Amino acid sequence: MVKNLSKISFVIAFVLLVLVQAVGGQSLYEVEIDSRNEAIDLNKTAKKNLEEGSVNNAFDELLHSLSIDSLLRETYLLIYQAWLKDKSYTDTVVCAMDKGKRIFTDDDELCFYRAEIYRHKYQLPEAVLEYTNATNYAKRNGEDFYLVHYYYLNRGNCFFQMEMYDGAIADYNYALKLKSDFAAALNNRAMCYYMQGRKEEACNDWKQALLLGYNLSEKYLNEYCK
Image (tube, rainbow, N blue to C red):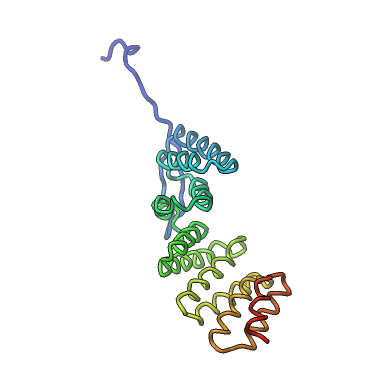
């Protein structure tokens, strides 16, 4: 029999069960409630620091948040927003987003952000792969999400840089299917047409893009469509 229970210290860990959607099923992860609450507080402070321009402090808080609770999706979104303000953290952000990809396995938005980082690093094949993951998941998750047409635009931009003009045109076409007044897609499709010697189609796209307010198209019209 145990005596003097008052002298024994008991530690009770309250656990939050987190359900994360995974390919082919669902995975169950455990997070201590205290850790989740601390991570939420850190994210709130980080968000405020980002708004005030204190990017370094925000990164510190977000990485701390990630270390104690890697299952909070908002942390990855905020880390990407911080990266947009300071690209010197690129390698750190790639590692963080890798962790997010392993947990949120069919998340098209996170795949898109990974692709954007790779495109910034000029790792175009890696970027194309992540954009493709994003487009595939979006077909399952719903293409009404406000960023989906950019998945196709920016994969098309990678194809353009790789001189794969047919692939780029196909992506710009799909982006325009999703958003018919997407002037950037019209402008960039025109560039592909021009590179393929399809001057009339290029000029028509540049004219339409300019009508939609894409002022950069005026430069191409003046240079290539006289």
